[in-house]
Length: 589
Image (cartoon, rainbow, N blue to C red):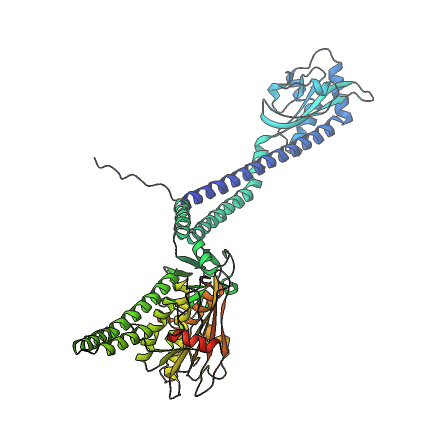
Protein backbone atom coordinates (compact mmCIF):
# COMPACT_ATOMS: atom_id res chain seq x y z
CA UNK A 1 0.00 0.00 0.00
CA UNK A 2 1.43 3.32 -1.06
CA UNK A 3 1.82 5.79 1.76
CA UNK A 4 0.91 9.39 1.09
CA UNK A 5 3.54 12.04 1.70
CA UNK A 6 2.89 14.15 4.81
CA UNK A 7 1.69 17.60 4.00
CA UNK A 8 3.65 20.57 5.21
CA UNK A 9 2.17 23.29 7.38
CA UNK A 10 -0.40 25.55 5.79
CA UNK A 11 1.19 28.83 4.66
CA UNK A 12 0.39 31.92 6.69
CA UNK A 13 -1.12 33.66 3.68
CA UNK A 14 -3.43 30.67 3.16
CA UNK A 15 -4.37 30.67 6.83
CA UNK A 16 -5.12 34.37 6.60
CA UNK A 17 -7.28 33.83 3.52
CA UNK A 18 -9.25 31.02 5.16
CA UNK A 19 -9.71 33.08 8.31
CA UNK A 20 -10.94 36.05 6.29
CA UNK A 21 -13.37 33.84 4.37
CA UNK A 22 -14.65 32.32 7.61
CA UNK A 23 -15.12 35.76 9.17
CA UNK A 24 -16.89 37.11 6.09
CA UNK A 25 -19.15 34.04 5.90
CA UNK A 26 -19.97 34.21 9.61
CA UNK A 27 -20.77 37.91 9.44
CA UNK A 28 -23.00 37.42 6.39
CA UNK A 29 -24.83 34.45 7.94
CA UNK A 30 -25.39 36.22 11.27
CA UNK A 31 -26.54 39.38 9.52
CA UNK A 32 -28.96 37.45 7.30
CA UNK A 33 -30.28 35.43 10.25
CA UNK A 34 -30.86 38.50 12.37
CA UNK A 35 -32.61 40.20 9.48
CA UNK A 36 -34.82 37.12 8.90
CA UNK A 37 -35.74 36.93 12.57
CA UNK A 38 -36.56 40.63 12.69
CA UNK A 39 -38.66 40.28 9.56
CA UNK A 40 -40.45 37.26 11.00
CA UNK A 41 -41.21 39.10 14.22
CA UNK A 42 -42.36 42.19 12.34
CA UNK A 43 -44.71 40.27 10.05
CA UNK A 44 -46.04 38.24 13.00
CA UNK A 45 -46.86 41.42 14.92
CA UNK A 46 -48.56 42.85 11.87
CA UNK A 47 -50.69 39.67 11.71
CA UNK A 48 -51.54 40.01 15.42
CA UNK A 49 -52.56 43.66 14.98
CA UNK A 50 -54.65 42.76 11.96
CA UNK A 51 -56.34 39.97 13.93
CA UNK A 52 -56.99 42.33 16.84
CA UNK A 53 -58.58 44.91 14.55
CA UNK A 54 -60.83 42.30 12.95
CA UNK A 55 -61.79 40.83 16.35
CA UNK A 56 -62.74 44.29 17.66
CA UNK A 57 -64.81 44.96 14.57
CA UNK A 58 -66.70 41.70 14.89
CA UNK A 59 -67.16 42.01 18.68
CA UNK A 60 -68.55 45.53 18.37
CA UNK A 61 -71.32 44.51 15.93
CA UNK A 62 -74.60 45.24 17.80
CA UNK A 63 -76.46 42.39 16.14
CA UNK A 64 -73.69 39.92 17.07
CA UNK A 65 -73.78 41.14 20.66
CA UNK A 66 -77.53 40.66 20.80
CA UNK A 67 -77.33 37.21 19.21
CA UNK A 68 -74.59 36.04 21.61
CA UNK A 69 -76.60 37.43 24.59
CA UNK A 70 -79.67 35.56 23.39
CA UNK A 71 -77.82 32.25 23.19
CA UNK A 72 -76.07 32.82 26.53
CA UNK A 73 -79.47 33.51 28.18
CA UNK A 74 -80.83 30.12 27.08
CA UNK A 75 -80.55 27.09 29.29
CA UNK A 76 -77.79 25.00 27.81
CA UNK A 77 -76.16 25.34 24.42
CA UNK A 78 -78.06 24.86 21.16
CA UNK A 79 -77.11 21.82 19.10
CA UNK A 80 -74.36 22.09 16.46
CA UNK A 81 -76.71 22.09 13.47
CA UNK A 82 -78.72 24.90 15.03
CA UNK A 83 -75.57 26.90 15.63
CA UNK A 84 -74.30 26.22 12.11
CA UNK A 85 -77.45 27.70 10.63
CA UNK A 86 -77.62 30.53 13.16
CA UNK A 87 -76.75 34.25 12.67
CA UNK A 88 -73.56 34.06 14.80
CA UNK A 89 -72.06 31.46 12.48
CA UNK A 90 -73.05 33.53 9.47
CA UNK A 91 -71.41 36.70 10.87
CA UNK A 92 -68.17 34.89 11.74
CA UNK A 93 -67.81 33.14 8.38
CA UNK A 94 -68.61 36.34 6.49
CA UNK A 95 -65.78 38.17 8.30
CA UNK A 96 -63.35 35.24 7.81
CA UNK A 97 -63.96 34.93 4.11
CA UNK A 98 -63.88 38.68 3.60
CA UNK A 99 -60.48 39.16 5.33
CA UNK A 100 -58.72 35.87 4.54
CA UNK A 101 -58.29 34.99 8.19
CA UNK A 102 -57.54 31.42 9.20
CA UNK A 103 -60.42 31.40 11.62
CA UNK A 104 -63.01 33.64 13.31
CA UNK A 105 -64.30 31.84 16.41
CA UNK A 106 -67.06 33.16 18.68
CA UNK A 107 -67.81 31.65 22.10
CA UNK A 108 -70.29 32.20 24.88
CA UNK A 109 -69.42 33.28 28.43
CA UNK A 110 -68.23 29.73 29.24
CA UNK A 111 -65.92 29.31 26.25
CA UNK A 112 -68.17 27.05 24.18
CA UNK A 113 -67.88 27.61 20.45
CA UNK A 114 -70.83 29.35 18.86
CA UNK A 115 -69.05 29.84 15.52
CA UNK A 116 -66.12 27.93 14.01
CA UNK A 117 -64.87 27.25 10.45
CA UNK A 118 -65.26 23.52 11.15
CA UNK A 119 -68.97 22.86 11.95
CA UNK A 120 -68.03 19.67 13.81
CA UNK A 121 -66.29 21.80 16.43
CA UNK A 122 -69.43 23.82 17.27
CA UNK A 123 -70.61 23.52 20.84
CA UNK A 124 -67.21 22.36 22.04
CA UNK A 125 -64.82 24.10 24.41
CA UNK A 126 -62.18 26.18 22.66
CA UNK A 127 -58.66 24.66 22.57
CA UNK A 128 -56.95 27.77 23.96
CA UNK A 129 -57.56 29.51 27.26
CA UNK A 130 -60.35 32.15 26.87
CA UNK A 131 -60.18 33.42 30.46
CA UNK A 132 -58.36 36.68 29.66
CA UNK A 133 -60.89 37.74 27.03
CA UNK A 134 -63.87 36.57 29.14
CA UNK A 135 -62.57 38.69 32.00
CA UNK A 136 -62.71 41.78 29.76
CA UNK A 137 -59.09 41.95 28.46
CA UNK A 138 -57.93 42.11 24.86
CA UNK A 139 -54.95 39.87 24.13
CA UNK A 140 -52.82 38.88 21.13
CA UNK A 141 -51.49 35.36 20.89
CA UNK A 142 -49.31 33.03 18.90
CA UNK A 143 -50.22 29.45 19.43
CA UNK A 144 -51.20 26.23 17.75
CA UNK A 145 -54.86 25.27 17.77
CA UNK A 146 -57.08 22.78 15.93
CA UNK A 147 -56.43 24.62 12.64
CA UNK A 148 -52.62 24.84 13.08
CA UNK A 149 -50.17 27.53 14.08
CA UNK A 150 -51.55 31.03 14.04
CA UNK A 151 -51.04 34.62 15.13
CA UNK A 152 -54.26 36.02 16.53
CA UNK A 153 -56.19 38.07 19.04
CA UNK A 154 -59.02 37.56 21.57
CA UNK A 155 -61.56 40.30 22.32
CA UNK A 156 -64.52 40.16 24.78
CA UNK A 157 -68.11 40.46 23.56
CA UNK A 158 -70.27 42.68 25.74
CA UNK A 159 -74.04 42.57 26.13
CA UNK A 160 -75.88 45.44 24.40
CA UNK A 161 -76.04 48.51 26.58
CA UNK A 162 -74.12 46.71 29.30
CA UNK A 163 -70.60 46.04 30.52
CA UNK A 164 -71.37 42.37 31.05
CA UNK A 165 -69.17 39.97 29.07
CA UNK A 166 -71.35 37.43 27.32
CA UNK A 167 -68.67 35.84 25.07
CA UNK A 168 -65.44 36.38 23.17
CA UNK A 169 -64.26 36.69 19.57
CA UNK A 170 -61.01 34.93 18.62
CA UNK A 171 -59.40 35.74 15.23
CA UNK A 172 -56.23 34.14 13.87
CA UNK A 173 -54.08 34.29 10.73
CA UNK A 174 -52.07 31.29 9.61
CA UNK A 175 -48.31 31.41 10.38
CA UNK A 176 -47.74 29.62 7.08
CA UNK A 177 -48.94 32.77 5.38
CA UNK A 178 -46.59 34.77 7.57
CA UNK A 179 -43.70 32.44 6.56
CA UNK A 180 -44.57 32.91 2.91
CA UNK A 181 -44.43 36.66 3.35
CA UNK A 182 -41.08 36.36 5.09
CA UNK A 183 -39.75 34.19 2.28
CA UNK A 184 -40.85 36.78 -0.21
CA UNK A 185 -39.15 39.56 1.77
CA UNK A 186 -36.02 37.61 2.58
CA UNK A 187 -35.12 36.81 -1.03
CA UNK A 188 -33.49 40.23 -1.67
CA UNK A 189 -31.71 39.88 1.65
CA UNK A 190 -30.34 36.49 0.63
CA UNK A 191 -29.18 37.87 -2.71
CA UNK A 192 -27.50 40.80 -0.95
CA UNK A 193 -25.82 38.44 1.51
CA UNK A 194 -24.57 36.25 -1.34
CA UNK A 195 -23.18 39.28 -3.18
CA UNK A 196 -21.51 40.49 0.02
CA UNK A 197 -19.95 37.05 0.49
CA UNK A 198 -18.68 37.08 -3.09
CA UNK A 199 -17.19 40.58 -2.71
CA UNK A 200 -15.61 39.62 0.61
CA UNK A 201 -14.08 36.52 -0.95
CA UNK A 202 -12.63 38.53 -3.84
CA UNK A 203 -11.27 41.15 -1.42
CA UNK A 204 -9.68 38.38 0.65
CA UNK A 205 -7.90 37.00 -2.42
CA UNK A 206 -6.65 40.47 -3.37
CA UNK A 207 -5.46 41.07 0.18
CA UNK A 208 -3.65 37.74 0.09
CA UNK A 209 -1.86 38.72 -3.13
CA UNK A 210 -0.83 42.07 -1.65
CA UNK A 211 0.40 40.43 1.53
CA UNK A 212 2.38 37.92 -0.52
CA UNK A 213 3.94 40.76 -2.52
CA UNK A 214 4.76 42.90 0.51
CA UNK A 215 6.43 40.02 2.36
CA UNK A 216 8.23 38.79 -0.79
CA UNK A 217 6.60 35.41 -0.33
CA UNK A 218 8.09 34.94 3.14
CA UNK A 219 6.23 33.48 6.08
CA UNK A 220 6.08 35.34 9.45
CA UNK A 221 8.47 32.82 11.00
CA UNK A 222 10.92 33.43 8.16
CA UNK A 223 10.54 37.21 8.51
CA UNK A 224 11.16 36.97 12.26
CA UNK A 225 14.25 34.83 11.66
CA UNK A 226 15.52 37.28 9.05
CA UNK A 227 15.07 40.20 11.42
CA UNK A 228 17.00 38.43 14.18
CA UNK A 229 19.72 37.42 11.74
CA UNK A 230 19.91 40.94 10.32
CA UNK A 231 20.32 42.50 13.76
CA UNK A 232 22.93 39.91 14.74
CA UNK A 233 24.92 40.31 11.51
CA UNK A 234 24.66 44.08 11.01
CA UNK A 235 25.46 44.92 14.60
CA UNK A 236 28.16 42.28 14.92
CA UNK A 237 30.37 43.15 11.95
CA UNK A 238 33.10 45.77 11.90
CA UNK A 239 32.07 46.98 8.44
CA UNK A 240 29.59 49.80 8.18
CA UNK A 241 26.38 48.96 6.32
CA UNK A 242 23.85 51.49 5.03
CA UNK A 243 20.63 50.23 3.47
CA UNK A 244 18.61 52.60 1.30
CA UNK A 245 15.07 51.59 0.30
CA UNK A 246 13.70 52.16 -3.17
CA UNK A 247 11.77 55.21 -1.93
CA UNK A 248 14.99 56.85 -0.70
CA UNK A 249 14.45 56.12 2.97
CA UNK A 250 17.39 54.83 5.04
CA UNK A 251 16.32 51.42 6.28
CA UNK A 252 19.63 50.26 7.79
CA UNK A 253 22.36 52.30 9.47
CA UNK A 254 24.31 49.94 11.70
CA UNK A 255 26.54 50.79 14.65
CA UNK A 256 29.73 50.44 12.60
CA UNK A 257 28.46 52.98 10.05
CA UNK A 258 27.63 55.39 12.86
CA UNK A 259 31.12 54.98 14.30
CA UNK A 260 32.97 55.29 10.99
CA UNK A 261 31.03 58.36 9.84
CA UNK A 262 30.77 59.87 13.35
CA UNK A 263 27.01 60.26 12.92
CA UNK A 264 23.95 59.24 14.95
CA UNK A 265 21.56 56.55 13.79
CA UNK A 266 19.92 57.89 10.61
CA UNK A 267 17.45 55.03 10.17
CA UNK A 268 14.16 56.36 8.86
CA UNK A 269 15.64 59.58 7.46
CA UNK A 270 15.60 60.41 3.76
CA UNK A 271 18.89 59.61 2.04
CA UNK A 272 18.89 62.82 0.02
CA UNK A 273 18.89 64.90 3.22
CA UNK A 274 21.29 62.72 5.21
CA UNK A 275 24.42 64.57 6.48
CA UNK A 276 26.87 62.10 4.93
CA UNK A 277 29.86 62.92 2.68
CA UNK A 278 28.88 64.00 -0.82
CA UNK A 279 30.86 61.09 -2.27
CA UNK A 280 28.34 58.68 -0.72
CA UNK A 281 25.42 60.58 -2.27
CA UNK A 282 27.18 60.44 -5.65
CA UNK A 283 27.40 56.64 -5.51
CA UNK A 284 23.60 56.26 -5.42
CA UNK A 285 22.59 58.59 -8.21
CA UNK A 286 19.92 57.13 -10.53
CA UNK A 287 22.33 56.90 -13.47
CA UNK A 288 24.95 55.12 -11.38
CA UNK A 289 25.42 51.38 -11.49
CA UNK A 290 27.48 49.04 -9.36
CA UNK A 291 30.96 50.58 -9.22
CA UNK A 292 34.35 49.52 -7.96
CA UNK A 293 35.25 50.33 -4.39
CA UNK A 294 36.39 53.90 -3.84
CA UNK A 295 38.12 55.65 -0.98
CA UNK A 296 37.14 58.72 1.01
CA UNK A 297 38.13 60.43 4.24
CA UNK A 298 35.47 60.80 6.91
CA UNK A 299 35.91 61.56 10.56
CA UNK A 300 39.69 61.46 10.24
CA UNK A 301 39.63 57.96 8.79
CA UNK A 302 40.23 56.53 5.34
CA UNK A 303 37.21 54.49 4.30
CA UNK A 304 36.82 52.07 1.41
CA UNK A 305 33.27 52.46 0.13
CA UNK A 306 31.31 50.27 -2.26
CA UNK A 307 27.69 50.60 -3.39
CA UNK A 308 25.58 47.83 -4.86
CA UNK A 309 22.10 47.89 -6.33
CA UNK A 310 19.72 45.54 -4.49
CA UNK A 311 17.31 43.69 -6.80
CA UNK A 312 15.01 40.74 -6.10
CA UNK A 313 13.54 39.35 -9.28
CA UNK A 314 12.38 42.41 -11.21
CA UNK A 315 11.81 44.48 -8.09
CA UNK A 316 14.16 47.32 -7.22
CA UNK A 317 14.89 47.16 -3.47
CA UNK A 318 17.27 50.14 -3.34
CA UNK A 319 20.98 50.36 -2.51
CA UNK A 320 23.40 48.75 -0.07
CA UNK A 321 26.53 50.72 0.86
CA UNK A 322 29.39 49.09 2.75
CA UNK A 323 32.12 51.00 4.57
CA UNK A 324 35.49 49.52 5.55
CA UNK A 325 38.08 51.28 7.68
CA UNK A 326 41.49 51.48 6.00
CA UNK A 327 43.04 54.10 8.24
CA UNK A 328 45.43 51.74 9.99
CA UNK A 329 46.25 50.05 6.70
CA UNK A 330 47.01 53.43 5.12
CA UNK A 331 49.24 54.39 8.03
CA UNK A 332 51.04 51.05 7.98
CA UNK A 333 51.46 51.33 4.22
CA UNK A 334 53.06 54.78 4.56
CA UNK A 335 55.30 53.54 7.33
CA UNK A 336 56.30 50.58 5.19
CA UNK A 337 57.01 52.96 2.32
CA UNK A 338 59.22 55.00 4.65
CA UNK A 339 61.04 51.86 5.81
CA UNK A 340 61.44 50.74 2.22
CA UNK A 341 62.80 54.14 1.26
CA UNK A 342 65.31 54.08 4.09
CA UNK A 343 66.30 50.51 3.21
CA UNK A 344 66.91 51.59 -0.36
CA UNK A 345 68.99 54.50 0.92
CA UNK A 346 71.02 52.19 3.13
CA UNK A 347 71.68 49.82 0.25
CA UNK A 348 72.74 52.78 -1.86
CA UNK A 349 75.17 53.87 0.86
CA UNK A 350 76.61 50.41 1.37
CA UNK A 351 79.14 51.03 -1.35
CA UNK A 352 80.13 54.27 0.35
CA UNK A 353 80.89 52.31 3.53
CA UNK A 354 83.04 49.95 1.52
CA UNK A 355 84.85 52.81 -0.21
CA UNK A 356 85.49 54.52 3.10
CA UNK A 357 86.90 51.36 4.61
CA UNK A 358 89.07 50.74 1.54
CA UNK A 359 90.37 54.31 1.78
CA UNK A 360 91.28 53.90 5.43
CA UNK A 361 92.92 50.57 4.69
CA UNK A 362 94.92 52.20 1.88
CA UNK A 363 96.14 55.03 4.10
CA UNK A 364 97.22 52.55 6.75
CA UNK A 365 98.92 50.24 4.30
CA UNK A 366 101.11 53.04 2.87
CA UNK A 367 101.88 54.48 6.26
CA UNK A 368 99.88 57.70 5.90
CA UNK A 369 98.65 57.66 9.48
CA UNK A 370 98.03 61.40 9.76
CA UNK A 371 95.86 61.40 6.63
CA UNK A 372 93.98 58.41 8.06
CA UNK A 373 93.33 60.34 11.30
CA UNK A 374 92.13 63.39 9.39
CA UNK A 375 89.88 61.23 7.28
CA UNK A 376 88.40 59.58 10.39
CA UNK A 377 87.81 63.01 11.96
CA UNK A 378 85.92 64.10 8.89
CA UNK A 379 83.76 60.97 9.09
CA UNK A 380 83.00 61.61 12.75
CA UNK A 381 82.04 65.21 12.05
CA UNK A 382 79.74 64.48 9.09
CA UNK A 383 78.35 61.11 10.21
CA UNK A 384 78.83 57.61 8.87
CA UNK A 385 76.15 58.10 6.20
CA UNK A 386 75.73 60.97 3.78
CA UNK A 387 72.13 61.52 2.82
CA UNK A 388 71.54 63.88 -0.12
CA UNK A 389 69.83 66.41 2.19
CA UNK A 390 71.34 69.87 2.49
CA UNK A 391 71.98 70.99 6.08
CA UNK A 392 70.84 67.62 7.44
CA UNK A 393 73.08 68.30 10.43
CA UNK A 394 70.41 70.70 11.78
CA UNK A 395 68.20 67.71 12.58
CA UNK A 396 69.09 66.22 15.97
CA UNK A 397 66.15 63.83 16.44
CA UNK A 398 67.24 60.41 15.07
CA UNK A 399 63.77 59.61 13.80
CA UNK A 400 63.54 62.83 11.81
CA UNK A 401 67.08 62.36 10.54
CA UNK A 402 66.32 58.89 9.22
CA UNK A 403 62.92 59.72 7.77
CA UNK A 404 63.85 62.98 6.04
CA UNK A 405 67.12 61.44 4.91
CA UNK A 406 65.24 58.61 3.24
CA UNK A 407 62.91 61.13 1.63
CA UNK A 408 65.99 62.97 0.42
CA UNK A 409 67.22 59.83 -1.37
CA UNK A 410 63.82 59.43 -2.98
CA UNK A 411 63.70 63.09 -4.04
CA UNK A 412 67.26 62.93 -5.36
CA UNK A 413 66.28 60.06 -7.65
CA UNK A 414 63.64 62.37 -9.18
CA UNK A 415 66.07 65.24 -9.61
CA UNK A 416 64.84 67.26 -6.64
CA UNK A 417 67.15 68.59 -3.92
CA UNK A 418 65.70 68.19 -0.44
CA UNK A 419 67.14 70.61 2.09
CA UNK A 420 66.59 71.60 5.68
CA UNK A 421 65.74 75.25 6.32
CA UNK A 422 68.12 77.32 8.44
CA UNK A 423 65.46 78.02 11.09
CA UNK A 424 65.12 74.33 11.94
CA UNK A 425 65.40 73.62 15.67
CA UNK A 426 64.18 70.42 17.32
CA UNK A 427 65.15 70.13 21.00
CA UNK A 428 62.73 67.34 21.98
CA UNK A 429 62.17 63.81 20.78
CA UNK A 430 59.37 62.66 18.49
CA UNK A 431 56.87 60.50 20.42
CA UNK A 432 54.20 59.79 17.81
CA UNK A 433 55.98 58.56 14.67
CA UNK A 434 52.76 57.41 12.99
CA UNK A 435 51.09 60.82 12.78
CA UNK A 436 54.38 62.57 12.03
CA UNK A 437 55.07 60.08 9.21
CA UNK A 438 51.63 60.62 7.71
CA UNK A 439 51.65 64.42 7.87
CA UNK A 440 55.31 65.11 7.09
CA UNK A 441 55.49 62.40 4.43
CA UNK A 442 52.40 63.72 2.61
CA UNK A 443 53.68 67.28 2.63
CA UNK A 444 57.13 66.28 1.31
CA UNK A 445 55.67 63.95 -1.34
CA UNK A 446 53.32 66.66 -2.61
CA UNK A 447 56.16 69.20 -2.63
CA UNK A 448 58.43 66.83 -4.61
CA UNK A 449 55.69 66.20 -7.18
CA UNK A 450 55.06 69.94 -7.49
CA UNK A 451 58.79 70.60 -7.93
CA UNK A 452 59.08 67.93 -10.62
CA UNK A 453 56.08 69.33 -12.47
CA UNK A 454 57.17 72.98 -12.04
CA UNK A 455 58.79 75.15 -14.67
CA UNK A 456 61.74 76.32 -12.53
CA UNK A 457 65.18 75.18 -13.70
CA UNK A 458 66.34 74.41 -10.16
CA UNK A 459 64.10 71.88 -8.42
CA UNK A 460 64.16 71.89 -4.66
CA UNK A 461 62.07 71.23 -1.55
CA UNK A 462 62.82 72.94 1.73
CA UNK A 463 61.65 71.64 5.12
CA UNK A 464 61.81 73.52 8.38
CA UNK A 465 60.96 71.73 11.63
CA UNK A 466 60.60 73.46 14.98
CA UNK A 467 59.31 72.26 18.31
CA UNK A 468 57.80 73.93 21.33
CA UNK A 469 59.15 71.70 24.03
CA UNK A 470 58.19 73.90 26.95
CA UNK A 471 55.04 71.88 27.50
CA UNK A 472 54.65 68.13 27.98
CA UNK A 473 53.97 66.90 25.40
CA UNK A 474 55.19 69.64 23.08
CA UNK A 475 54.08 70.95 19.70
CA UNK A 476 55.87 70.19 16.44
CA UNK A 477 55.74 72.78 13.65
CA UNK A 478 56.55 71.74 10.09
CA UNK A 479 56.91 74.17 7.16
CA UNK A 480 57.38 72.76 3.64
CA UNK A 481 58.12 74.87 0.53
CA UNK A 482 58.97 73.88 -3.03
CA UNK A 483 60.14 75.30 -6.37
CA UNK A 484 56.97 74.37 -8.23
CA UNK A 485 54.44 76.65 -9.89
CA UNK A 486 52.24 76.95 -6.80
CA UNK A 487 48.49 76.49 -6.54
CA UNK A 488 46.76 76.98 -9.87
CA UNK A 489 45.20 80.38 -10.42
CA UNK A 490 41.51 80.38 -9.52
CA UNK A 491 41.84 77.45 -7.12
CA UNK A 492 40.93 78.22 -3.52
CA UNK A 493 43.60 77.10 -1.03
CA UNK A 494 40.99 75.19 0.95
CA UNK A 495 39.96 73.24 -2.16
CA UNK A 496 43.23 71.31 -2.25
CA UNK A 497 42.31 69.66 1.06
CA UNK A 498 39.14 68.17 -0.42
CA UNK A 499 38.96 64.44 -0.95
CA UNK A 500 40.02 63.58 -4.50
CA UNK A 501 42.09 66.72 -5.11
CA UNK A 502 45.49 65.49 -6.25
CA UNK A 503 48.77 66.79 -7.57
CA UNK A 504 49.40 63.71 -9.71
CA UNK A 505 50.34 64.65 -13.27
CA UNK A 506 47.40 64.53 -15.61
CA UNK A 507 47.40 62.93 -19.01
CA UNK A 508 47.52 66.34 -20.67
CA UNK A 509 50.78 67.16 -18.92
CA UNK A 510 49.39 69.59 -16.38
CA UNK A 511 51.27 69.11 -13.18
CA UNK A 512 50.82 72.18 -11.04
CA UNK A 513 49.29 71.81 -7.62
CA UNK A 514 45.54 71.91 -7.97
CA UNK A 515 45.56 71.31 -11.71
CA UNK A 516 43.12 68.44 -11.68
CA UNK A 517 40.39 67.04 -9.47
CA UNK A 518 40.49 63.29 -9.92
CA UNK A 519 38.58 60.44 -8.38
CA UNK A 520 39.98 58.67 -5.36
CA UNK A 521 40.57 55.42 -7.16
CA UNK A 522 43.79 53.86 -6.08
CA UNK A 523 44.15 56.15 -3.08
CA UNK A 524 45.05 59.33 -5.01
CA UNK A 525 43.71 62.59 -3.64
CA UNK A 526 43.56 61.42 -0.02
CA UNK A 527 46.99 62.52 1.29
CA UNK A 528 46.32 66.13 2.23
CA UNK A 529 42.78 65.39 3.37
CA UNK A 530 43.94 62.58 5.64
CA UNK A 531 46.90 64.61 6.94
CA UNK A 532 44.66 67.55 7.83
CA UNK A 533 42.18 65.23 9.56
CA UNK A 534 44.99 63.73 11.63
CA UNK A 535 46.35 67.14 12.55
CA UNK A 536 42.95 68.51 13.52
CA UNK A 537 42.17 65.39 15.50
CA UNK A 538 45.20 66.19 17.63
CA UNK A 539 44.09 69.82 18.00
CA UNK A 540 46.41 71.12 15.26
CA UNK A 541 45.93 71.96 11.59
CA UNK A 542 47.53 72.21 8.15
CA UNK A 543 47.30 75.56 6.40
CA UNK A 544 48.59 77.23 3.23
CA UNK A 545 50.98 80.07 4.12
CA UNK A 546 51.66 81.08 0.50
CA UNK A 547 49.99 79.95 -2.72
CA UNK A 548 53.19 80.52 -4.75
CA UNK A 549 53.51 81.79 -8.28
CA UNK A 550 54.16 80.57 -11.83
CA UNK A 551 57.83 79.79 -12.32
CA UNK A 552 58.43 79.46 -8.57
CA UNK A 553 58.80 79.57 -5.75
CA UNK A 554 55.80 77.34 -5.15
CA UNK A 555 53.26 76.90 -2.37
CA UNK A 556 54.24 76.92 1.31
CA UNK A 557 52.44 74.66 3.78
CA UNK A 558 52.58 74.68 7.57
CA UNK A 559 51.50 71.82 9.83
CA UNK A 560 50.93 72.12 13.56
CA UNK A 561 51.10 68.82 15.46
CA UNK A 562 50.45 69.14 19.20
CA UNK A 563 51.54 66.36 21.52
CA UNK A 564 54.13 64.78 19.21
CA UNK A 565 57.40 65.66 21.03
CA UNK A 566 58.59 65.26 24.61
CA UNK A 567 60.00 68.00 26.78
CA UNK A 568 63.19 65.98 27.40
CA UNK A 569 65.81 68.02 25.56
CA UNK A 570 68.43 66.39 23.39
CA UNK A 571 72.04 67.10 24.32
CA UNK A 572 73.44 70.23 22.70
CA UNK A 573 76.02 69.49 20.00
CA UNK A 574 79.62 70.46 20.60
CA UNK A 575 80.41 74.03 19.54
CA UNK A 576 83.11 72.81 17.18
CA UNK A 577 80.77 70.30 15.43
CA UNK A 578 78.97 71.33 12.23
CA UNK A 579 75.56 71.20 13.91
CA UNK A 580 76.79 73.21 16.88
CA UNK A 581 78.44 75.74 14.67
CA UNK A 582 75.32 76.07 12.55
CA UNK A 583 73.09 76.55 15.55
CA UNK A 584 75.50 79.03 17.05
CA UNK A 585 75.63 81.00 13.83
CA UNK A 586 71.93 80.89 13.05
CA UNK A 587 70.51 81.47 16.49
CA UNK A 588 73.05 83.58 18.32
CA UNK A 589 73.98 86.27 15.80
